[in-house]
Length: 233
Length: 233
Image 1: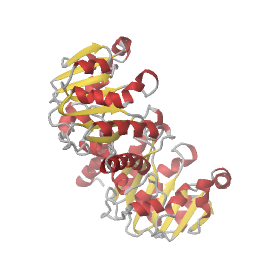
Image 2: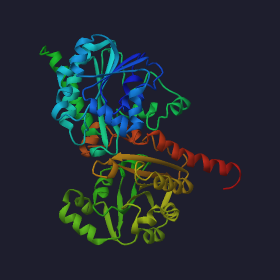
Image 3: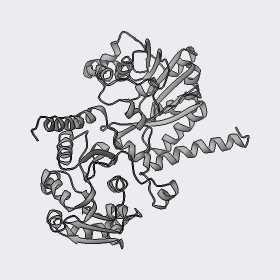
């Protein structure tokens, strides 16, 4: 979902950057999308790559995909050196405590914005509305302030706390409607990708939130609009 | 969700039976629906009622709702004595192990069918596709074989194993389309009901399943249709 939600929201996702994602699962999924020509991945911890290849071969296989160029290093620094290069940037980080905190801050969203080509899209892991609605709201706010369009979606991950993970999505294009995929794959295509979760209808439903969560995020959008209208922004 | 999914799928849910639901939460929610005139609840364990009133007053309050008539007894036996009485029957049981096993079997669905008025609807707790896809599929099959229309939905419950709970829904009316609520409440109405989760769009999205789960349930529907076509049923 962290892969196909942004990829299917982009009209032509040819070049993709993955920040983090050391287990290889995101690279494996991104490579399935037929429009994707090249994937660059920047993982800060080489041990994660080694351990994944050794002990999680079904995910680690993504790290040897021919579309992929793998760098060990800091995603922030990498993006500063690669401006306007990517159609889609996916951040598959750990939770916003300790070393990954910086990947949830405003400056990170600005950094991604500068590394995107025109019309580019980002998708970042963003916690869950059930345990961390404040962090979700704050991350969404950063994304909303940085991009022309922003949205929040979730996927069921039964092994994660609360059984879900959330994603914030941002787009440089005001035309983007994250809730309606631009690229819709047939059942045969999805079978050939070995997709057990994603479909166009799952994509649409991923943006439908419980009322308490939708209200929390709607409030951010309307506050920002109010500030804009009164000239505070 | 176990309340408003079936209630909002019924054109006029006046009389509702709750089987189980001893904590009072379902009665509390059912009573919010303005069409509901009377609720009958049959809970087998009087201790659950006492403990809930004492220690879970925010749910136990549902047990003293003026619309509610509470019986301590066996739901199976109760339904055998009350034929064609209810518009909606909601089964809020424990998991399908031990004493609650019988509430997941074909005979239970048949018993509910006989207790319904024409056009009646049932909704039963049915496990989760992530941990018990076989039990979900079996329960769905019983429902599908007993009712003119059957469907499966889920709700996020972060404190449950895998973070979800599932529901099977069955209707005596072939016109029922569970995925599209007949009754749509305004935001103001939902606020007045103190609804933090349910909305019409959440209702629709609750029926959208991951591909592996949708395939498992679609297979049951197509197998039954095949049998019907070849005269085996």
